[in-house]
Image 1 (cartoon, helix red, strand yellow):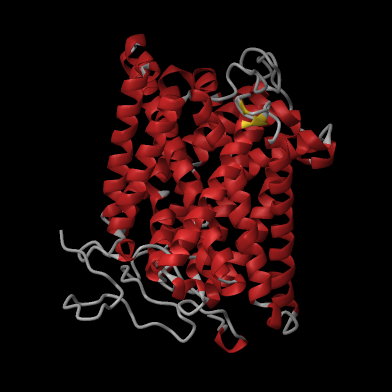
Image 2 (cartoon, rainbow, N blue to C red; image 1 turned 135 degrees about the vertical axis):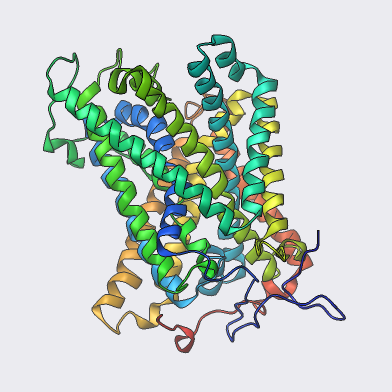
Length: 523
C-alpha cells in the first residue's frame, strides 16, 4: 500500500498532499475536504457519544446517587459541556485544524501544555475505545442468546478467551471502516444513529403510556421538581451524579476533529457540535423522565435504583416496556450504539495523532495520508492496535484493573476539556473588549465551563485517592483508580520528554506558533 507523507522531505520524489503552511504555522494534512455536511458532522458527534449505551449504563448509577433528581443532574452536566462547546466553536472559527484541543492549546499556552492536552485526548479515547469494544462484545452475545433462546451462547460473554477474541474482532472491523475514510464512516453512521434515536423514541412513548395507565407498581407521576438540582440531598451525591452526567456527553467534539473534511470548515463544525448537544440533551431528558415514570427510583425489581440491574437498565426494562418482540430492538439499539461509537471514536484519536505528527510533536510516520481514502491510515491502524493491546492486557491482568481504568476516564475528560476552554479565553484575550458577544462567547462562557470542569477534576482526583472508589482495589493503600489515572498522565509527561529530545523545534515553538490579534480571523 502506497502512502504519502504530507510534509515535504529533502530529496523526496513523492508528491506532497499538504497545502503550504500559513503564517502562524498551521498546515494542511491532505484529508479529503468538503466530504462532510452539517448533518453528517452532527451525526458523527452523536454517534461518538453513543447515547443508547450511555443511557443503559448510567441511568441506574445516577438514580442510585441522586434519586428522582436524575433529570436535573443531566441538565447540570449539560451546562459545562455547552459552555465548552462555545469555546470549541470560537476556536474553530479562528483555526479550523483537525488537531483541535492540541493545536489550539499549543497556540494559547505553548508546546508543553498543548502536548499534554493532546495526550489527554488520545489516552481518554483509547480507554473509551477499549470499553466500547467490550460492551459491543457483551451485547453481541446477549443479543444472540435472546434470538436463539440459548443460554449457552449468552454465557460465551463470560468466557474470557472468547470475549477477548471477539472484542479484538470488533476493534479490527471498526479500524478497517475508519481506515477507508469519511465516506465509509458516514454511510454506516446514518443507519446506526437513526436506529438508536428511533428505538429511543418508541421506548419513551411506550414507557410514558404504560406509566400513565396506573396499573404499574412503583411507577411515578411526572413532577417538575425532578428538574431542580437544588433538591439533591447532599453536595457529595450531586458531584457524584455530575461526574456520571459529564461522561454521558463526552465525544461531541468529534464534530470539530473532522473540520478539515467538513464543508464550510470555519463555521459548520461548531454548528454541528451545538446541534449534536441539543439532540443529546433532548434524548437524555425524555428517556430519563420516561424510564423514571415507568419504573420509579426503587431498589427492587425494575426500579431504576436496583443495584442488580444498574449496569444495564435497558436489559431489565426491554420486555416490561416494549414486550418480547419489540424488546429485542433495545438490545439491537445498545449493540448498534456501542458499535457505532467504536467506529467513530477512531476519528478524534487518529486526527489528533495526525496533527501532532504533522507539527512534529510525534514521529513523522503518523502523518502519512492514504492516497485513495484520504484518511490518516497509519494513525488509525496505530490507534486500533493500541486499543486491542490495551484491552487484552487489562483483561488478562485483572477485571478490577479494567474497571478502574474506565473509572479513571473522567479525569482525562475533564483534564483536556478544561484546558481547551481556558485556552479559548487566553487565545482571544485581546478581543474581549471588542463587543459584548466577544466577551461572553470568547471569554466568560469558556472560562466558566473550564472552571466547572476543573472543579470536577479536582474533586475526582481527591475521591480517587480512596481505595473505595471504583473496584475497591489499592496500591500501597492508595486507590487503584488514582494510580491508573495519575499514572497515565505521568506517562504522557515521560513521552513528551522523549519527544522533546527528538523534535526540539516543536518544543521551542518554531513549528506551530502562538496567535497574534492580526491572525485571529472570524469566519
